[in-house]
View 1 (cartoon, one colour):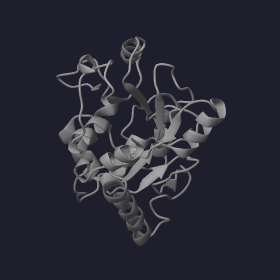
View 2: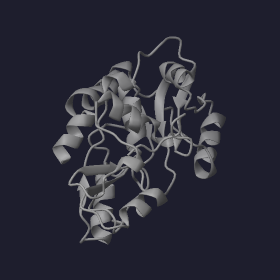
View 3: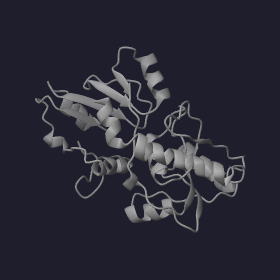
View 4: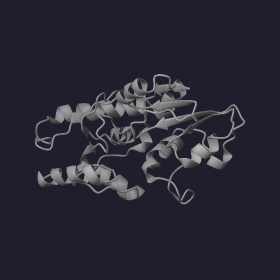
Length: 253
């Protein structure tokens, strides 16, 4: 069920732009919220969970409803869902510890070759965060800037976004909460763009490989070009060959 901000869905969330792009590129069947047949035996994957989904599924239904939690810790299986998916193994452990009875499954968020583009020269920015910058994130970005790093702007305008990603050196993953959980959509985006990923502490980065964020470290100078190339080649292969978006969903279902 679509939930995004564009001409057709003015009340949606831009945060899920990449999710729906992956769904389209992978030829996944999609429908509007109003088209969900709650009396069918079909399976629907909802991302994110919101009031509209809760209202829809609070009524008696025979369809199978899955909540794919792609951003927040998500340690509670809401009663209107039959199953919850998470794409971070630390998040899975947290969910199982706090709600042992919950039907929670680890499902990697895979990518697609066409989600990314071709990196370009010259590089204009050292780090691209592609996130809403406020609170702790804004403070961390300010700290990085004071250390001399150039920080790319974040945008969801497609052409601007592609140009920024193409002319950036590193993908940056900053946490919005204290939990050591990755942001799967950001990891997939950077992997498909062949950007090495600089991330705050993550309990388990599987299936990707990150480099630890440290504002006091000479991040851009302490790794050889061979090491960096090996990192983004590994992540690109994972996202576009071994764990593609459609293959991950089909395996989970």
